Length: 101
Image (cartoon, rainbow, N blue to C red):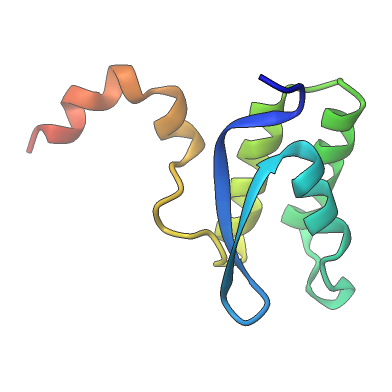
């Protein structure tokens, strides 16, 4: 796997609702750098800082991905079929619990 690549891409709705697939720390960084200053919030700042740390090799790409997913959820731009970080990390252990009910 290429350093900085996400294990699973994140698809966001940007602009006029067009899907954009983010596959790496650098993709996420570029998206967040271009984000309108008027629409930036604390989730944006955390995700952007995570990207910078990911580029510097201080944190892993999956941590960057998790912060991007949180940012996208808080801004209501996450495409619904993108797995959450918890689902991605715990899919083996949670599989049986999800079918109970």
